[in-house]
Length: 351
Image 1: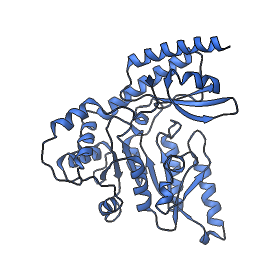
Image 2: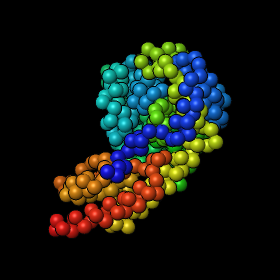
Image 3: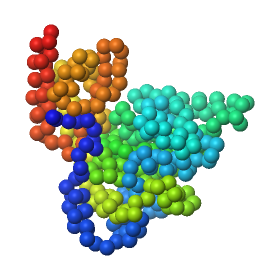
Image 4: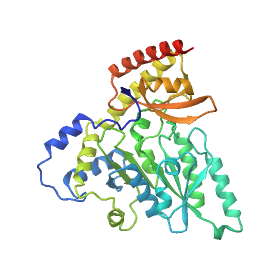
């Protein structure tokens, strides 16, 4: 069955697979001390225009989020995030399990605003009982967000200014960062992120790699961070496996090129749905497409196509999500067109 459930349901880009096979029998040091990881880190530093940045390769996004947040925060601090943020909704309480609270902020289409952030922090600072509360120590953002939306450079700068005013760190989850960078709506670059963030990661798992994220500390990592990676069980003995992948992704602009391909396919998928008379839940910004369906339509379409259920709008309607990826093909777009024709015929028969 045709599937657009997510952007990590296929293996990896063929150039990564070729690089892994080609390097398979080489003898390299473990724990990220290999030549591939060192070379990949240097390429990332150049791409970020941040020669002093420290780069670490972590197996997955939840590990990376928990590792950064639990390391950067003091024991009495929590992390501010959109109520729809990944750490608030889809990580099984991983942050709370590390001993830190996720402090939820109101959101619009997945994004928080500098105004709401400032209001929350101002109210907290005036609370006479604040010494008995969890203190805010960090702001967590996703770029793109869970709704596929993007923070503009101006929005990020405003949030950074609020963080500076209140002494907070800024951390960005870049699980789908490649697709954000490739979006026609984007005006934020890797050097911008390196300038504005205390930490961020460049997602590989959802952007062409078998697994792995590149965690960047533009201004230097916390003391003994590598030891803390090990302590939290986030260190691969065969660290080269991620190093090889990011060395490949950051050679000849592969990371950006495959992300641009995904964005082109996302636009085509959106157009197929619109041409078939479906309603978009929100405009396409990155690689995720959100479609409004009745519950009956969802049930019938699920027999023809795999997608993600996103949310219920009311008793009759819901939103589904489809994701284009580095691996989406023109043939799959045409197959979707045929699937939607069959779906419409079946819906007509049910009337």
